[in-house]
Image (cartoon, rainbow, N blue to C red; front, side, top):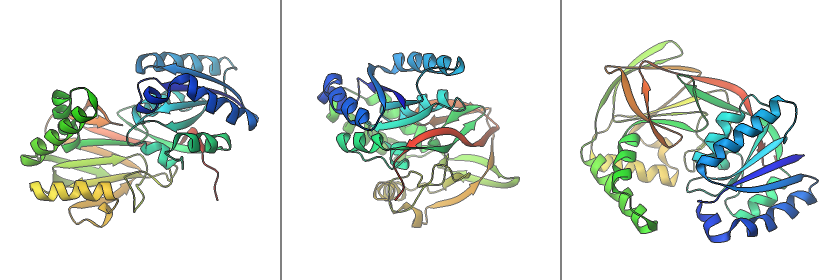
Length: 302
């Protein structure tokens, strides 16, 4: 298989390892498995341009059969949005902070182990979802999530310590006085009014016992998660449960699923995080599944 690998130069792993050292791991391992491989370092801006070139090649009947993204969930989301429906498979080397979609594909977090797994990875269909036509692979976050993203962005300073400080400040600021969203959720035609401090819609249902990522990225369902608590302690405990993977049994969150979701509200737009990126969506917002629209390289089963 002809594979093109794009490595985010700004990821923590690439800053410490370097592109050339990464090439010395990736190319021999994938070539031993019979693949033809090229590796290129990119930035967030140049990644989009390189992906557009790959899509143009695919439409012309050429180009690689697979693109591997070495980066975090944001880079992977950018790639998925462009590669969906093209027939070009998406592989992931997890080089970000959470690496949630990579985990859904069964990819190890250790770099060298992930490369070895990628060498024998199998093409499989995966779902992608859209909100008002905007594609996403992991989740939409309303309420607490975008509020925290805004506060964290304002407080962010350089370095790991700066990121920890900005996150802690965002948690305290948002949880101390959470905003309540009065929404109506229309799940497969059934309307439910909610007064929520947090709403998450996932591309596929999250599995249990681990961080919030899908065990099956092609399950055909949207996950809908609603938090109505306004208490600082409740929100802090729920955050801890999410990190520990015990959130599914937490009474502070309700879990449903749907194939089609409409979100109605009193305002015309609402702040949202789309695969971690802070944006705004028009209301009513329609969230839909595109089952099997993305081809991925996943760890071999069994």
